[in-house]
Image 1 (cartoon, rainbow, N blue to C red):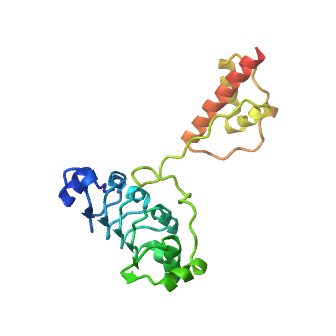
Image 2: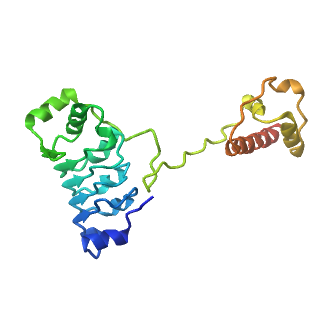
Image 3: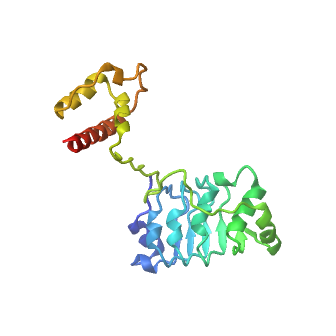
Length: 233
C-alpha cells in the first residue's frame, strides 16, 4: 500500500498548508491511499493517473475541484461516481482505462454523463448537449455509494461490525449446537447451573467455524446464560 502523505502533497504542490493547495500532480506514483484528499477543500486540479486507486470516496471533500485525471487506476465499480456527483465545479474528468469502463464503452460514457451532466469534457473528448440528453435513457443512474464493502479511511475494506449478543430468549438453548456437550456443561457448571442431557444436542455435527467466530458466539452464550440465571434467581 502506498499512501499519499501530507508531506508529499505540500512538496509537490509547493505549498505550506493543505488549505492553500490548488493543483496537485501525482501521476504514476503507485498510490493506493488518497485519504489525504479529505484535507484538500480548495484543490482545483488533481492528476492521479497511472496509480492503483480503487475508491473515489476521499475526493468527495474536494468541493472546488474542476479537473480530475484518473486514467489507468483500479476503479472497478461505476457506483464510485456517487462520490463525484456533488462536486459542483467539476468540468473535466478523465476516467478511461479503469476496469469500470468495460465491457461496453458506450454504456460507460452514458452512465458517467447521466450522473455528471455538467461535465464539459470526458476522457479527453468534448461532451455534447446531445450526449447528455441521450444519457437520460441510455445511462444508469447511481443513487447510492457502493455497498459491497465497508470503506475505511485508508481506502481499503474496513472491518465489519460484529453482531451483538442480542436479548436473552427461550431460543438461547439452540446455540448449544455451536459447542460440544462437554464444553457447554462445563460452562453451565462454572455458572452454578445444572448440566444438560444429551437430547439437547443435535445428532448432526455443526460446520467448523473460524476460531474468532466461535469464540465470539461462546462469549455471547455465556452472557446469555448469566443473564438467564439472574432472571431465575
